[in-house]
Image (tube, rainbow, N blue to C red; front, side):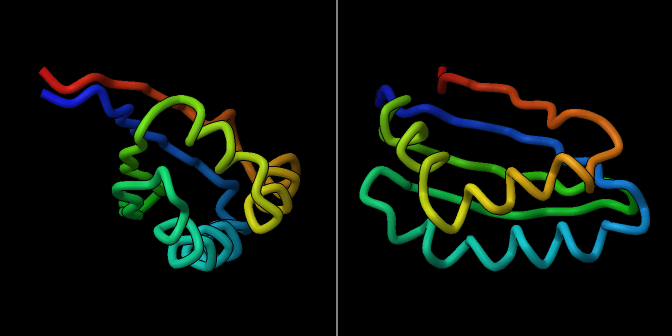
Amino acid sequence: MNNHLYVMAKITPKIQFFEHAKSAILDIVAPTLKEEGCRQFAVHQDDRSLYLYEEWDDQTALDEHYSMSYVVPVFESYKAWLEKPVEINKLSRL
C-alpha cells in the first residue's frame, strides 16, 4: 500500500467562462505531469463542471504544485471565473 495523496477537485465556472477555465486547466496538464511529485493529473468534464483527478507523492508535492508559476495565474483567474468555490476532496487509497 502506498501513502500517496489522491485529490478529486470539482471546478464549476460561470457558464460564460467555462471554455476559458477548461483551456487554462488543460494548458497546465503537461507541465504538471512533469513535476517530480506528480503521479497523475487528469481532467474530465460534464455539461457544467470540470473535474481533476490527481495523485501526488504527498502533501508537500501538492503544495509545491500550487505555487508553480503556471498554476498561480489559473487560481487568480478563478476569482472571476468560478460560480462557486472549488470542491476539493483529499483521499487515501484503501
